[in-house]
Length: 182
Image (cartoon, rainbow, N blue to C red; front, side, top):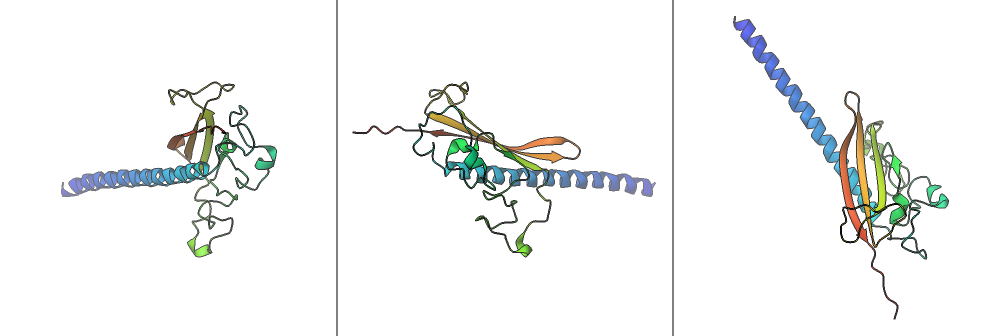
């Protein structure tokens, strides 16, 4: 009888530990995904609203062929260049896998790199689009423009059991303020 009670208690304890470990893994992934999304959003926010010398109301959003020809995103110089960006595993602006570089295109010392393949199941994507001036939750049609662009950054993880899981979904609205020339 004592053995049966011990076995039941032990299996219950193992189920609890297994559940706690899964929850911890999920929370660690969500935290990392939020950081990855925030890093990319900050990179986007550091760019100009529109290409220098070009009207800020272009309907064809996305990088030019010259901007897309880089090894990563190092040639992206304005917000709309990120439209349609999707890549996995995540990389820095120079095409170096996250956790392997110094953030300037060079490699990190091997002792301070994350393990090979850690981010292989991760993917990021970006959408840039114009939104209504009076209600920024309303996405405009592809041929309409305004002084406001929304940027959505999403981070996905492909779980072997659950499939693709959205871990982070971040949105910011950027505005263009025309300056009247005297």
